[in-house]
Amino acid sequence: MRWSNRESVKDPWALTLLTFSIRDWTRSSKGGEESAETIIAAKNDDRTALGKEGADLLYHLVVLLVERGVSLEEVGDELVSRRKEKSRSYRTSRTYTR
Image 1 (cartoon, rainbow, N blue to C red):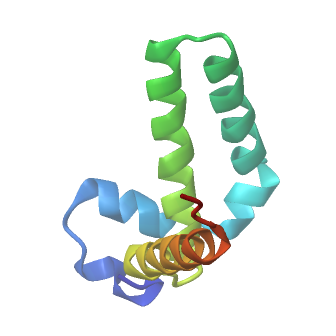
Image 2 (cartoon, rainbow, N blue to C red; image 1 turned 180 degrees about the horizontal axis):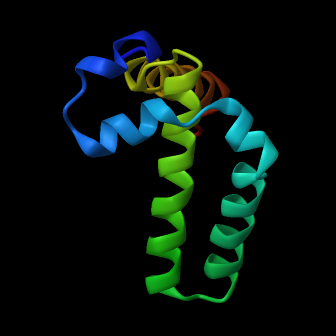
């Protein structure tokens, strides 16, 4: 979904994503703010707050990705690539002794 398609979007959540901009993210420091709140909730071992703050962080990250034209599929592909690379490194670094 691209910024130019926002007029055809009917889903309110998706429309919200498309109407925010990178300027809003940086001007309000939402990335840093939500990251800090998520870290604090985790440090305080507050499961409820961690779920809420994690949701906020993910929401604002998706806003940023949508604004910049990066799909969740691209992010997923990157994660898979890293996992494969890590797995390959792990297998080659292990030595077996009997």
